[in-house]
Image 1 (cartoon, rainbow, N blue to C red):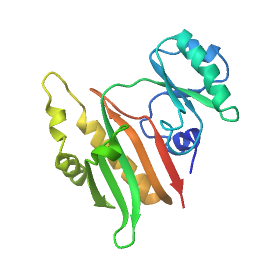
Image 2: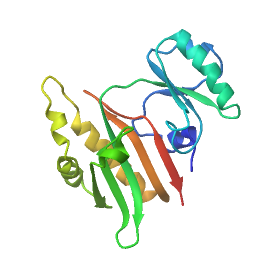
Image 3: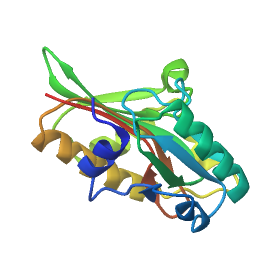
Image 4: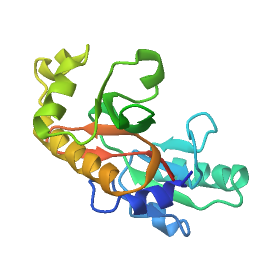
Length: 194
């Protein structure tokens, strides 16, 4: 399983939330708050407290010290806060159908809600649009007073699907991918190569 930094480097060229490695406290002062600190570990980060939200520079300095104590052998990154609808895009292998792409509502409740649509690769943009429209919670995108750039999300999913076709990926979870008003950004990734 790839670590955070390895995963982000593997996804280079896709729309990632802005991030950088924290080398010292000076790196924190150039950030906008709120933001997130993440330990460069593989696997689920929320359960291991490898991701922490920081509300201010003072808060980030304190939490960085805590993270260095908890993860003394791992690099720490700082990542921008990006608001919107949390989605998940994943890849699994099926004995009968081969590579299966999953698209659904993500975040920390992805495994509880299980509002997900599946298709065997390769897929077209119209397949992706249909997958999203099949989701039980699709109406959230029509909420009054909010606009979300679904077209941007469809394009991002198409790029991810292409990457999954050309690379030897065993399993992948991009969760969350956040759909904002103008952009879509990948915030976290778990990737295992064959």
